[in-house]
Length: 363
Image (cartoon, rainbow, N blue to C red; front, side):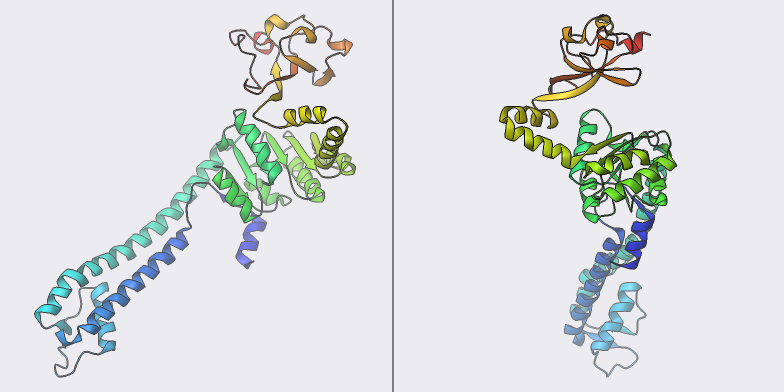
């Protein structure tokens, strides 16, 4: 890896989506095109050299060096007049072929310079505007399978892509995130400067899905130092690392290996139960697990009597199972964890109750 790329990865560079190619690639392409125009013109003059005369030495035949010289001064300026077309054929070639090539050559050089400067200025403006407007956003550290699934769930539930920023050091993740319309900070998320560029200090939520548990711990510690109030969700591979990640500052820790292992065990013991659990974990079809506000007409009722299948009640920040005596009667301000069809918006009231107020709005 080149030295400049390594430094860029360490410091973290903002990459916004919808940029099709690098301006330096465009500059190289245009430079090759300019060389092609010059080469074609040199060949044209060389093959028609009998139609040109060197006014400094009329008896001398125009050679290859003279053709190169004539091409460079003709394409870059209007020429010096020392080598000129002497017969009708050469003059027609100059009028209808070399003159358009001269115009195209000059437009190519001027246009390239202007475009490179404009592109760089436009990128700086876009980055400055993004940083100015980025507040209360979501930072996703790691854009592998888990990171992409988390982003898909957020976007499907109403989170705008403009309010999500991905942090990942790999070029593959950069391409995938840009293809999904997301802004990217390329860099190591365990470095404070990289997280600062991602605006972690102003983020509302941080989702950490690195490939290594030690990197998850370091990233969690750094995020918590930069933002004591952000809600941090982290994924770890091994159950033994859950307490360490929680002590590092994570609010919620998901163990990927244990979750997969439990699903495999359930599927082997009861294929039907395993199929239902897979349905709940798979987003977009079948059943969904969702959280919603308690509606005003539902106050005082038992969780089992509601249209939704209530599995838990959140009261005063504590999660109670639906059969817990503490939540026998639902109270204003409660939130419900329910199982419902995926066709319904997970975070909205059930169809038919949209005109009713939630208890949190009626207080």
